[in-house]
Length: 178
Image 1 (cartoon, rainbow, N blue to C red):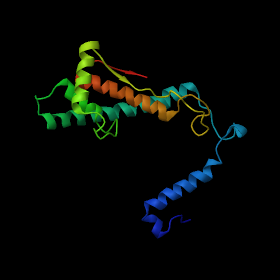
Image 2: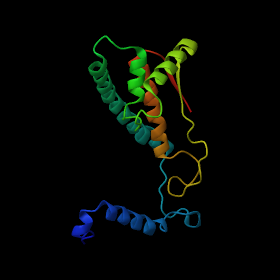
Image 3: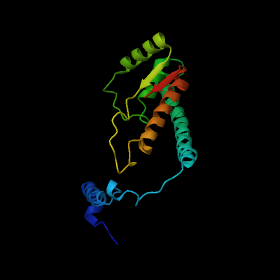
Image 4: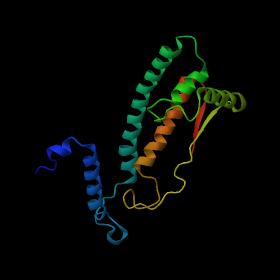
């Protein structure tokens, strides 16, 4: 069965429209509270922690190791081999596109360097604080409840990896608070 005509193949707008139509039709097929128990499978807690979460952590660790090498290479290219400080490492790590899609317009390099220098001097630690999972609505799409879904767990693990990478690259202790 052919879904796309030649015009649709060339148009992003029609791709978006197809996605909207698809989600509109699927929206009514969700496992809602009135039909709870028909469209899901339970997995054991051990399987989730050992298999799913274990693989997710392993994949993220490998990705962040590769990313760390790229960041260090970029720092050497940008600042030379000896002309950089811990704050430069911190800045480059925080502004890396692997973690955040930012344009560096929201906070300047000097602000990041000053904040990190002050944190290291006053507390001896860099704290990353991210208030996520604060108001989680009930979602039949995600998990039938108010516990974190895989996307949110992945976000937490990625933030943990950022703290770990900041510690490795800068040589300073870094903690992620949520």
